[in-house]
Image (cartoon, rainbow, N blue to C red; front, top):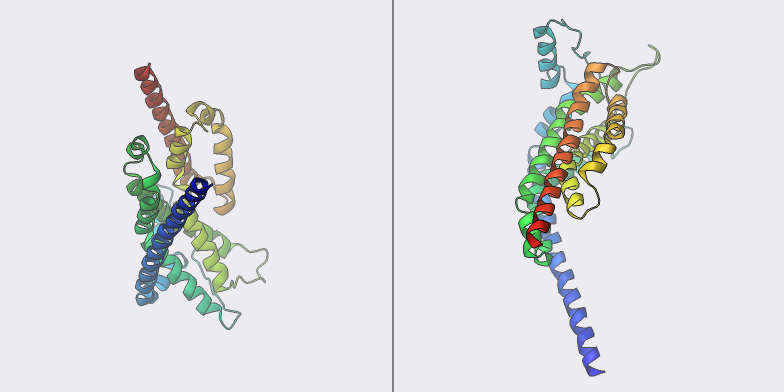
Length: 278
């Protein structure tokens, strides 16, 4: 009876220690996000006016380079985006301040993302065996790289297409588009961050292949449905022309194909290990 009580206390103490370790890592993540938020607050004018409101400006790099490419390949101004005449409003007394807080907190999280990921890795690492540690080498680098590449894609490709399309869409000339600032930021920020998460697809498929949930064969069979889903999604968020859909769809399809190659490599390694074991 005494032995059973001692074991219970040991398990409870171990569980408490894990919670305490998690609390420390979460506190460090919060501090890192707060430091990033302070950085965003200091450069708030540049972050809001030049970055977040960038897709509303006619000199935005995506509009400029797309128009240059259109003329270079002999299409004239066919693929030049329409100039945006977008006015925004704040219809609540705290509207602008709420957006300000969202911007600096989300911006702080993005800036501190590699450090936050490293903290979670330090928490999980003691529970992994040597084989799992070897298979997860470089995970922080690759997750961070894909996250920031996805954000860049969302910001320079998807966001300007989406903003340009909806800003110029009108059912009638008598109807003016005057969105609220919260509506604008609630469209651009999730779209940009969503791309950062969507670009984790190859790594997600890698770990799913490791545990045997997916395989290269199953992904190949599902390929045509995956491509269809990608095309439908990009068709909704981009202007109604084929060129825009292609620009937005191709990177996502490439990521899916990379995921198939990653799963195939995982399967080859597993087969090799099984043969060596036999």
